[in-house]
Amino acid sequence: MIQVEHLSKSFSGKPVLTDVSLEILEGETMAIIGRSGSGKSVLMKHIVGLLEPDAGRVLVDGTDINAVSYNELRRIRQQFGVLFQGGALFDSMNAFDNVAFPLRHFTRLSEAEIRDRVLHCLSMVQLPDVGPKKPSELSGGMQKRVALARAVALEPRYIIYDEPTSGLDPQTSNTINELIKNLAAELNVTSIVVSHDMHSVLVIADRAAFLYNGRIHWSGTIEEMHRSNDRELLDFVKASEYQIGPAAVRSSHTY
Amino acid sequence: MPDALTRFLQPIDAFGRYVLLMAHAFRSVGEFRSYRTNLVEQMVRIGIDSIPIVALAAAFSGAVTTVQTAYQLVSPFIPRSIIGSIVAPSMILELGAVVTGFILAGRVGARISAELGTMRVTEQIDALEVMGLNSVGYLILPRVIAGVLMFPALYVLACFVGIGGGMLVAELGGFLSVGEFVQGARDFFQPFDPVFGVIKSLVFGFLITSIACFKGYFTAGGAEGVGRSTTQAAVLSCVFILVADLVLAYTLL
Ligand SMILES: Nc1ncnc2c1ncn2[C@@H]1O[C@H](COP(=O)(O)OP(=O)(O)O)[C@@H](O)[C@H]1O
Ligand SMILES: [Mg+2]
View 1 (cartoon, chains in turn orange, purple):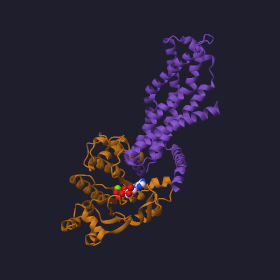
View 2: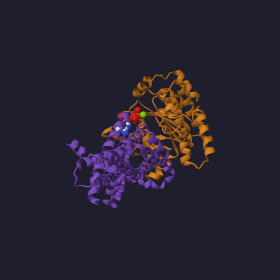
View 3: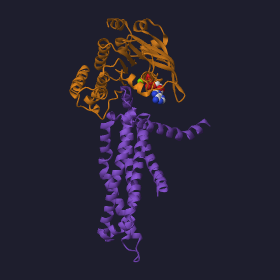
View 4: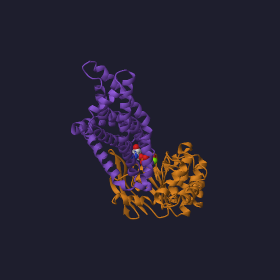
């Protein structure tokens, strides 16, 4: 379980997050939504300790990640898989070595076992043949899928996705949405999806938290979202290409 | 008023972060398994790949020093071997290390900070960190160690090539024979000179790589930021080479 308690953060005097509290339960998929620039990535970076809060704290399974030693923090981080907004593949390595990287550093698997695992992960994102390609030779969508393969290579308990579908064509988006749902269902991982793609959020999330003006303006289940008449939330949802209509409500219930 | 104060405190703040970063890097020296491959790769890229340009620059500086010394010493009362006595120590004491340093401030320093800066702005450093890897130990330590190990080697090479270049020009230009050159170089040879040169190149190697790592690691602001830290790394390294050169000469000679 991840708990964010009264977290505030400003950059050179400009507040980005103000008194943000959030709880992500074991096994659920939580979406953090909001306009671009609303601080979604900043919030997500606090959850893995890449940024330190000005006030408040982040608890992972009850441990305050900013109160422990660096080496302890590293052990906690090993339970996380993170898909960064731009993929963040190591561009000095090909796709295979990118996925193999965490396995080589954190397991004692043999090269043959690593090979099997890498190919399994790459097949999972439907890119079984891109191993020898450098990130620069892959399209943005492919880079994101390879990055997803790398993020799940160590079978993390928590997976954080930063804008997993932004900038992708609808078909690739659907592939990624399916993957996120499958991972949540099959491996029982706890997922945090940072997104402004409402279509994706409706399909994959159990609950959502809406960041607005640096605060969690609204949070609740997807079902509650459909019934909400919160002005800012509705504006945000309406502004996204996908309008929440009866069809979307139905489809979000079938999952 | 707070603005002026901020500007005054900036270099102090930067120096503090630099020291902390280096301390962090050297604390992870025990995690050899994680940076072993990087170390080998960096030694090749900093050391082996720099050989041609360092040799070229050293050969020319040795040759130019020889020609200019010969030009300044046009007196029948001074033995021509004195040219060798001037060129060889200049190379060993000053030019070998400084020429190598300036060249590598551009070549190695700029490359390291562009590389780390790009990794920072594309979140590759964040990706390393969230995997549970110590990004400072993994990225910075091997580069600094490679710099400290490879610079003295390049310095020795620069001295040999530079003095060789001087001899070649002396012989071909008809200033003095190789024999006279060697004689002159021997007459005034001080065993401490090459030791001093090696110490200097160790220091330069540390300065260039650590400054470049510092600038690259803390890059902010996209592609523009990468350009900024790359330029700053090269300029700062050159400035610190000059300062360190003077300080070392003053304290050790
Ligand atoms: N490291 C940083 N330094 C300064 N400002 C930052 C930093 N990271 C993010 N910001 C600022 O915080 C705000 C929120 O950014 P971000 O979390 O990336 O938004 P998004 O919701 O689109 O992910 C932006 O105004 C951004 O400029
Ligand atoms: Mg973002």
